[in-house]
Image 1 (cartoon, rainbow, N blue to C red):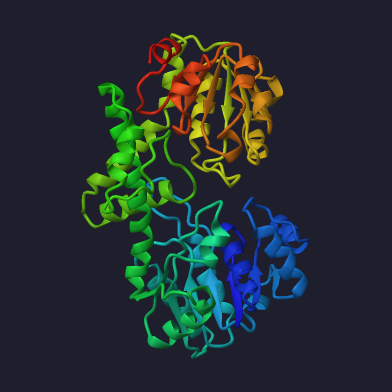
Image 2 (cartoon, rainbow, N blue to C red):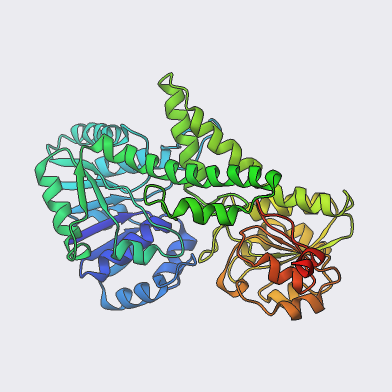
Length: 453
């Protein structure tokens, strides 16, 4: 099938590459000249496992190509995917300017009937707005083309996006007519051969489902984090509680890991957008406000624990940070808990030695002054990061941080204090090695208590 994907950001690039992998002819339109040049040269501008191999393979096969010209992209396309950004406005609403600008350009460019699909995360009613804009432009050109707009929200997790696309839990199709549904069913058929996972619904329901899904997952995270806060006051280990409630099939084990807060491009933005949508309808989103407030508070806990540990005196202290990206498997720093901690530590006069497999370049660009002054040092070695450190903070649970040589770490640190922002370590084991261990919602374990046990 001939496809066009407008926007070579995270969603657009993964979508284009995966459709090309199934033998479709895909043209991806990207207006940023620097990004376009890199893509045409076969260079992936983001870190996503497996994406480079797909890009290299299908650029060579001719199934995937990149252009800046929309007319070239849509020239033969049966389906056109809109995959441009919808960042948050100051009031929390989704900025639809990029989506509507694409609609204007499509209405001014299309010369044949096709299906336009919103892949971007957009509020309820956006497909109708896109349809209206396209129709108005077509009418001004005196063209009576059958251009229909559908919704096909993405459910990709950064770090496993290729697998999510190739083996989806579900494919949501929001269609206004049976012809659009049939076309999209044929397009997605290779991805769902082993099980029927295509869910068809009306367009507005599909648009809302994306927001509701992310808001629910964010709610699970904020709930377990709030329980962790209470556990910390009651001398209860949240990890034991997590296992206790996760065994209930109605609750499940996913997204109930206590930690230092969620980040990324989806959850924070989508919760804000849903709150704004509720306000526009005169509806009070009390649960969503609590979710957002709890997450904001959660991101401050590691700094507060460090400040308490050092009796408020962080000036000149050396703090090692393991993990800077908002989650493992990506270099994405958007809304990352590490940034909240970094800002606070640098403002308090601490010296920070950060370590991340792929996100150091992004942090270096953001904190160029601190890097130049020597207050911030960055690298990829976890052992270099802890040299001379007064405290070690695990922020992002990359695999290489899960089973380090803690005897070596202990020997390299000036003071063996470990703050586990993701609760991945055995507190008793670390205490027996001489570490002062602090987790999220876990009882304090020190060497004396461990020995007594």
